[in-house]
Image (cartoon, rainbow, N blue to C red):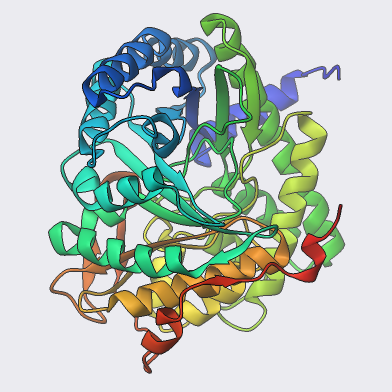
Length: 451
């Protein structure tokens, strides 16, 4: 599609970058490690390290060069790799922590911010390798700095693996007991996607090329600014305004993606046009919802406002690029959104309302701090609820909970940087232990039979 850029649009883009927090949130290189498999874990580790360092050697320098030449901020340069449970399946070792350490060393060697893919896909059942990887997660995430992990426990086609749900509740609990920050790098998915450039859930799917460039753009501040001109206008106008703004944001992301692809001689994969907030004032999804007319995010009407926003972002994005993918919509991470934090502290936003909002937005219960003594069965039940939303609605959902060690409701836990800080949120009383202990598989919904 040809797209002529005039001087007015150039000036608008400069203003978006300079005053409205517009940025490319991440340029993520996906790398297949399937050919690194070996029975000897030390050989496997060396192959993994060598391949990452060879393919991603110029990733950071290239991102910085594009940033300088185009004047477009690129906040993160990242790597996603094949799920390590697949790469390590041939290894005779019982512990995959050495592979996590190798990923960490390779990420540091090439200078990226994070590396994702210490992952397992067990939505229908476990392989031996899946179990080895999952049991390695607490040490893997607390003994490394840059490694991110994800586990897919449910899908619309397979249903919910409740044995995996129960196990992940225990794993999150174990990780939090060592270091709550480890939980900030761990996502439990339903319907995980193979081309997600955002952490902590990124991994390089088995249907992906040998190596690929995926870009994640972000612009809550830009959308908020545009909507301020729509005060009192009907929702048709609001939707059109969001669509046009998402179009401009996505075009910028595609420009960066194609340029990075050309310079690195790596195929361009997708632009993920998710509105990913930051703790900075004016870069908040909650603020967008309040500009639409809500007194406070979390009040009645929030889910409807978020549904409009998510849909309009997708419609604008797909007009701007033929390769929109990843998650693409609106993120609602509590710790990473100043407006969400404010809403929680004001008592307007509860975990129940957040769960309702995940029915219509990109992902799920993200970066939520819960009391430090929250039991594994409660964590598992929250995962099951979110997985059910994803399974029934044929969408990706996820849970990233942080049991805040030594803290209770009303306290705050600080993660630093883009991860921000979060108030510890209250949970429902009543034990789900007997429910979680049943195990087995919650069957897939009837509409999964589409073949």
